[in-house]
Image (cartoon, rainbow, N blue to C red; front, side, top):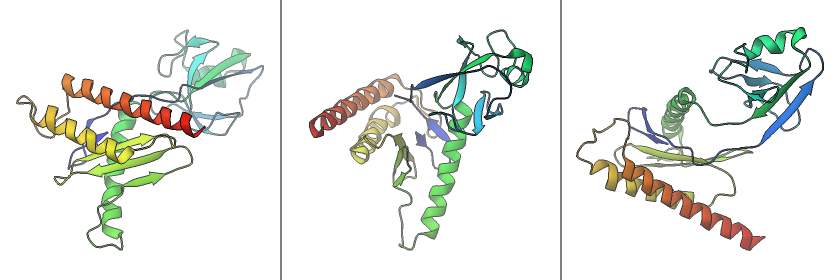
Length: 216
């Protein structure tokens, strides 16, 4: 993710995501999970079942792919879940990619957290959040002198994140800022930047996979 100084998201790319899926079939209503459809997808809001946790989305109904909040028969998934006559009902869950609106919210939220952390830090002249760790992932951030933020969300097994962000910044200066058609703070649409970024990510992933194999 790349965020401009005024908190706007100007670039994002998903190079990998959790592809794990899990299917469950219920013979009768109700399902022991609470769902929400506020984000354009049907997501688990409360409850856990197997590896399914809040944030997982319904990607198939009765083994048929869904479109947004609609089932394979153009019937809302929430209607099917709440209708006892629709059972037995089979739902397949997956983590999936983050939606466009969710990415904008994430960028805005992180920008605000970064600013708050800089102000409340006991260290004078704090550079803000550089790394955050959770049970499932870690977030790494690099802020340029001009206030542009580069941050990545990666698996704990991923190493060398700080050099990676600096390398992405170099690509940004070489292929974006030097592009005569690019307007500062506008969304980045540059094929050369995309292509070289993909190469760098592939190199880092190969190096990380080699390191993991060596340690094992």
